[in-house]
Length: 428
Ligand SMILES: [Zn+2]
Image (cartoon, rainbow, N blue to C red; front, side, top):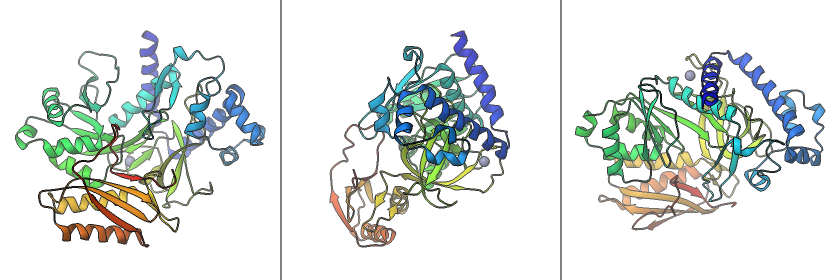
């Protein structure tokens, strides 16, 4: 316990100092850590050695960040199949590590381990996401998540409370009123739902200072709505359970990449770097987890980076936008990508102008040229208005695609924790 607290304390200092390091120095340090990670993985992790030898990688020739491209990608399936014997550092007792697994939106879970030191560092990068938007140790943090996180208690400091994501919205609102958070964090769709359902009287008893949304894609319109209802700023963050914190919005609402923790490449379909402002597949390399590093890990998410500078104090580079999960984006007959965020935005905009047009919806791309909208009609459903939405979607696609409408009583999420409104079944 004392060792754990000591590790947390050291990590807290480290991560908070790191944010002030100027970008050029930051990049140099990251590059060093990437090279160290690759060489270390080759020396100590059987699967990486086997994989690199097979691919003909001359490990001695990996000497600069440009050489990163010589190293092959690794996928979730490879990690899953080789866990733990061949993908965890030799000689490590995994019982002494922090063990976890992703819940897996594909229905298959991915197990992984972090050393206690890495886990302490990761926990503190989560804390930094909140301190950089105004969270202070005396604030109360309430989070909406499917499970509770074990956090040490420090009397009046670092107080937390958990609201389960699986209880009813009414129960969640009741818990929120009881816990009275200063900082509220959780799934975007759930907080959005709370914002829609909570009454003005109930809102008056709450004095939330900051809201952080995570774990799933949210649109600016959704965040604006939450912000307006609760009367406080809303910031978005993006992380995965296995690579931890990747990016989040600063006080200026710009997304910074946490390259002290994870390196992100933005690549086209041939594996070449895309230009700033172009959509690229985000490929990750973790640099703080020597027990089980993820090197050139394909998570299937898309984004655009930029060389622009933010006016805040952070020394981390920026990304311009997120373009949704690659596996949720649509691939059209011509091979063109359509961001799922764009489709989602279209719905949000229509809902904003026609509040009771629809109760709920789900859009599934069944085939490259066939999209089906499952719709639970709202009490003011109007065929002409909805046709207008379909016309906008046709405009976004920009090529011949059939969009079918199917009326349903309810949307079945098949028990998944993250509710996906936009889904593509093409190429799976
Ligand atoms: Zn910033």
